[in-house]
Structures are given as structure tokens and as C-alpha cells.
Length: 79
Image (cartoon, rainbow, N blue to C red):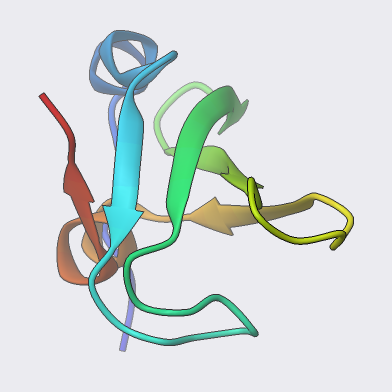
């Protein structure tokens, strides 16, 4: 399966947004909050890095990359 990615403009608009995980994956529990901290890619395909915020634990921060498909499937934006 080939993932769909963001356009540069879409990725730029997501920077700074807070998201919550809808599923458990890669050691991230359901309900964990993260922030879109960086876009990465080339001229046509862009992904987003999410930095997970572990407020009530002593865990080190984790940053994960997401395609558009993964972002839409695993995350929900907080208002």
C-alpha cells in the first residue's frame, strides 16, 4: 500500500496543532497528546513529525513521522 502525503501547503497549516492518538501504536497509548512540530519531504510529498507530550510520566519525548493517511487514521486534532 502506498501512503498518501500532504501537499506543502497542507503540511504548513498543520504546524503547531495539537493532536490526540486514537489507537495504540509504537509505544504511544490511546489518548496521548502530541504537537505537530515539523514538516518534512520534498517538492510534492510532505509528512509531519508529531512530538508526543508525556506530562504525567518521566518518559523521554518521542517524535514520530506521519503520512497524510496515517495522520487521518491514527490521530484527531484538538480544538
